[in-house]
Image 1 (spheres, each protein chain N blue to C red):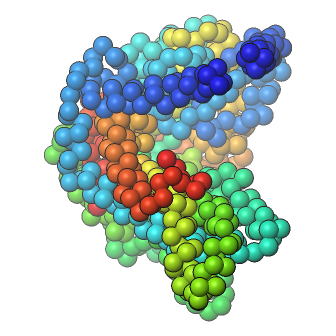
Image 2: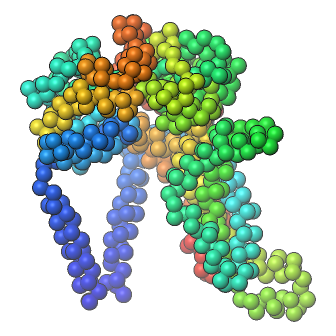
Image 3: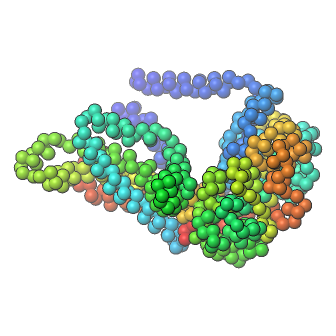
Length: 277
Length: 347
């Protein structure tokens, strides 16, 4: 067994531990990002982040990520529930239909929305043809939210679905035998048992939604930053890797915090499959 | 135990495979690093056939991307295509090597107006590739006013109809020029004033876009947009309602050039490539494909009429030079730019 874990350890070391320490190292130093000899220990980067400008961006990112996660949950849970109640053959087909779009490139799928939502795009063409006023669908927060929900919904549906299908049918029958109606069964049996899936789904949507910069760029028209945009710019334009790294650390801390909070709701920590940790 | 052996074997096979494929092509190679979508791919093929040199072509999005990649090392490029101010920075940091002009006789084809510019006074390091200006494209079906000033981008009549460039440098330059300042200003006060202008303008802006601006303007999604002149040509080709104007307050004149990094491994190959791209016939085809303006004299004559006689592609240089500025390296105030841009986008 030990030998088999060795490649895994190397992998973790090279692709998780080392980069993480590099980010930490950059975050707590200042100097010319390309020249290690100029590095000096400093908390300057974190102080700089306390400026309201950056805090506002962080709050905005949290808000958008939060709203998109809730939307994914509201849309995703019923979908997962409906699929899990189908016959096994149809279940597989429906899940497949859900996953197929993910085989295509994420950027490509987001670009497609540009042609759909543009001022003279598909949706507005349809609307004006039916005699309605054309709408401003693109380049605002709603478009960003739509992009997030569209892209991340499968991450919500799949874990919930996998937990729901594993619920022992005997439990449902028992509830029925004991006189619970369908609503009570759902509330008292299905919902609590689905929580591990909900927790996993929530974290799997929240994390990418919190750190995305592509969606806000493409569908938000770069009008308002998310923290992902700020970080991207530090690395690619300004060249201040120190500040970029410290923002990444702050982002990580917030993600950890939210995961800890969501995890509190997951009473069954042993995880009936699907728990992320 | 057996598993480890299989693993080892696999790794060995992989290594062998990589080595073997690397050895498959015996031709000399050059590594070319250029902006995305900034050359006619046919031209690369022709170069390979004529010179028997294989071209490894890769792309970047911005000068800064390219700079960081080069600075980090680990990759070797023979020809890259930085812009004016970036050449200034790279020469200053010793990242470029002098071009042997004997190997680039076609340098003589370059219009003298584009030689000996401030960023490389003797053209020791750079050969111009494309050039252009920044201006406003507007849709004549949506704009009735005369477009001759940056002020129109602040006109409330066009709220939600204005596209700005998603580029700190270019957008701040527009605001600076509107205020009558130099786009190379180092004054924090002037930059602050430009920031206030951009914040004032933001509610009117439809979006801040990069390459997408072309699609948006062609589709008629917005009335006005700030674009590079080359993109203007490409947009006007697709949508005849679009016009281009250089505002009277002045604008940016830019040059993208071919240079050889000091870490280049095949300098002769690089020089042959640069020389090839300066051939009038090749330069003309490339310029037509891209819509950008070539600095090669005879190449302009070979272009189709709509480009050759275009005021957009080839403005009267004497006139333009009076009101344009070439960017200087903003290295020392790059954080100021970044702060302004962040403040603008956290509104």
